[in-house]
Length: 135
Image (cartoon, rainbow, N blue to C red; front, side, top):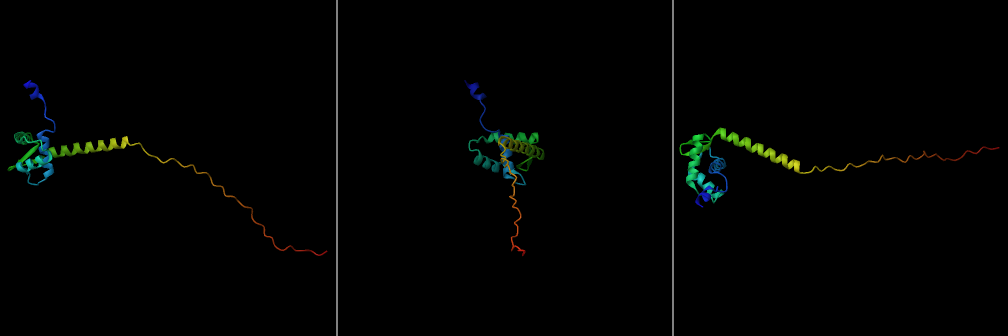
């Protein structure tokens, strides 16, 4: 029974993704320190308390190039930031396209305009005093 329990994956995002989200949310120009990242994660994800996994995710991310370490703070590397922006923009476009495609287009029914006919009145004749002729 122990191997089956160990094989079960924990629900939720990976610590590397959480760390990336935290660093981008903190948005400090000098980088985000480990205590600041922990504070943000504990506020956003209260169940994520495995700080060793977070430390290893940051360390592995720094070695792979997705994070850069500045003194004792971490930044998201420019390459990873560009990839995240492209992915977010693509997802936003797909969501907008899906929302646009799902909503049926509402078109106003065309109104049939009947040609208005003016009732043309015959010109009124002037009736004046008749001239009488004498016989």
